[in-house]
Figure 1 (spheres, chains in turn cyan, yellow):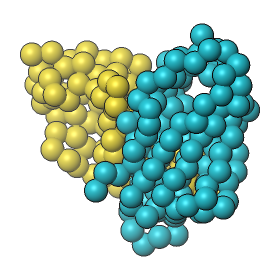
Figure 2 (cartoon, helix red, strand yellow):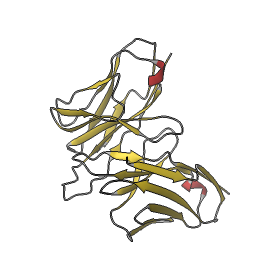
Figure 3 (cartoon, chains in turn red, green):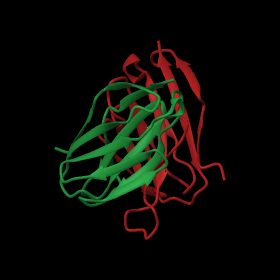
Figure 4 (tube, one colour):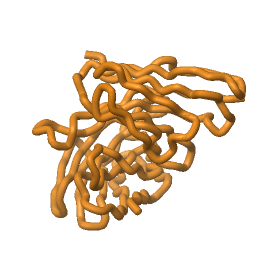
Length: 116
Length: 111
C-alpha cells in the first residue's frame, strides 16, 4: 500500500516551459488536492477535486491546470513556468468529511520545482 | 477570513525539556483541527485530529489539546528524534475538505 505517490521528486524548468507533476493514490480516496509550500508560509491550496471528472480552484490557481479522469490520478500542469512558481508541491488525498472513517489528509513526498 | 497562526516559529530544546507549541485559529464552523509532523524533504505526516473544545489526544510524548480559539501541542521529555517542523491546520465550513495551514514551528531537540 503505497499511499500517495508523486513524481518527479525534483525538477528544474526554464521560464516558459510547461510540465506535468504526477500524483497517484491507492487508497480509493474521493478527494484529492494540490498544495504549494513556500518558506515562511503555510501550505496553500492550488486546486482540488471531489471525485473523477470534478475539479475546482483553490486559493492560488493561476498558472496551473488540473484534470481528474480517474479516482487514482490527479496531475497538475504548469502551463508556462515562471520563477514565482519555484516551490515545493504536495499532493494530498482524503475521504469526504461525510465519511464515517477518518478524514485526515494523506500527503505525498513532494516535488521540489525550480524555475530559472 | 479563516486564519491559522503558529508560535513560536522555531524552538530549541534540550533533551528531556518539556514545552508546548501554540496554534491560534479563526475559522467559521470548525470541522477539525489537525496536527502534522514534517521532516526535511518529506511530506506532512498526520498526528492528530481534534474536533471540539476540551478534546485531548495523546501519542507517545505528544499531547494535543483544543480550546475555542487555540490548540496546544505539548511535548513531554522530548528526544532528538522529535526534531521536525510541526504544522497545524483547520478545516472550516464549505463542501470540501479544504485545510488552512499555519506556517509551522521548527523544533530542534539537542542531546
